[in-house]
Length: 156
Length: 156
DNA sequence: GTCTATAGGTTTCAAATTTAAACCATTATC
DNA sequence: GATAATGGTTTAAATTTGAAACCTATAGAC
Image 1 (tube, rainbow over the protein chains, first blue to last red):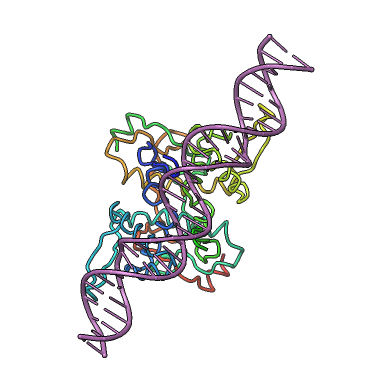
Image 2: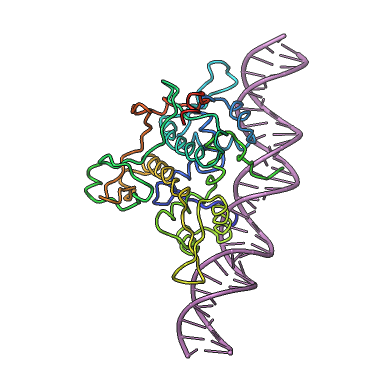
């Protein structure tokens, strides 16, 4: 069809499938806010400044995808809470990866005075590293996507 | 303005800034293909099936952002090559994080027969882990975004 | 040299999406 | 019972996307 965003859901690629779920303009920011403790429609809306109909559509989609569940709000029968599922929480690694890249490449030195920190001791997380099965730290050119061997398939 | 996509570039958030650069529908897929060895306009276009005008606009933006450089094609003066910069290569961690989440949550068991592997020995990479400065492995609920302390600022 | 094919775009136009603002329904609060 | 707040939906304009047609420069065939 003409102006319709192409559908990536059938792609045999993990990246494309993930983007199909959270790859639009707002979803990851909504999820970021959820990690930051926000749970109500109005909280997301106020913090993000996103149009209410868009927020509504995104939340519905993310609930459909199993990223959020809708829970009753114990404080008020008028509101309800969008709570991250385990599936949604596991997006945390992606958020940290995005944050760290942005921190390194999109800010002037000293411009960003927030960091991703360890809740226990408030120390910033060290940069994520790609580590091989044998413990070697990999550089970006050291990995690729390849067909699994049968050995791998059975092993997992 | 009315129908205009909101600008996140001014946000004091690493995630928002990163999404401003690579957060649209196609950019990360183009970059994925670049990791996969593709370098020419026609290669990206054929593999992704993206409209040529969109690909053109995205490549231009990514060059402007310093993700790609344009190099002359030694094979042909008609074509040229889009080559990932170091900044672009450092997006690899994000791609792996996206892949692994999608692999785990968006495929039926056995449906995906590709994996992100270590080029050296073809073994799949283990899942990325969030590791604290002291080496503890962190769960999604163990980190948050917080203001840097002065100690952190001077240390880095 | 001329014809043709190819790479790498740009232009055009219709369809879909985004946004802002207005509107509506339900539930608290006074 | 009136009023306000929450969580949306509806509407209409502006922008973006996508498909196809078109254009330009180089390469190769003749």
